[in-house]
Length: 188
Ligand code: HEC
Image (cartoon, rainbow, N blue to C red; front, side, top):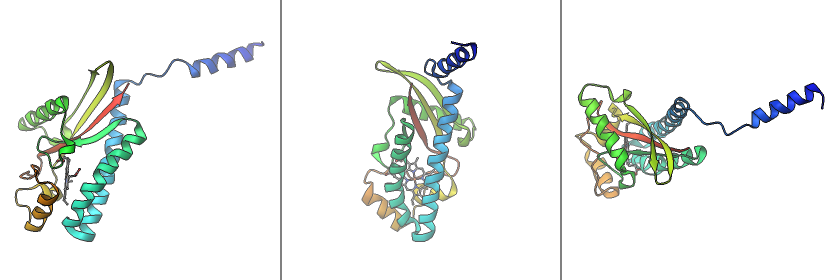
């Protein structure tokens, strides 16, 4: 084998190399990107439905489209991607123990005056036999959210919500509150 051929073989082997272990920073950045995608896509559908069919139409968007987007992004990334909250509308979004603790931590930070938009948390945790990387980012309550999550939800909307979510707890929010959080689990 001549010298150049040896070098190219060495380079090819280096490129194959051992599996590239992603750094924590890379995992955070990738999580933020997936959340951006989730939030942006959902916001687009929500605003369109609000403008075209009004809030009652938008309820079905939240009901059908939000879980679908979560499923699509989970399939695309191979992670588990979703939304959760301490006061749930859909019981399917219930937090596990780790998520509950993080949401409580967000509430405490919010009470200290930290804006909801700045609250995020990550940790590598042991789950059974495997280590997983977990990431959460708080979802701030914006003014548009109050139509369906505020203290004075209009009668028609309230009836539609009660019909779909008889155990709805997700009202009574004010602008700037932590409505919930995006939550991601990346297998290592
Ligand atoms: C048109 C009514 C409507 C508006 C406006 C709305 N939501 Fe919701 N929201 C819902 C419905 C319905 C669900 C339940 C979705 C489901 O079944 O997964 C929900 C669920 C959620 C959840 C998941 C946790 C839970 O309680 O189940 C979060 C987080 C959330 N909304 C945040 C927001 C934020 C932030 C805004 C403003 C940007 C907003 N919503 C605006 C109707 C609405």
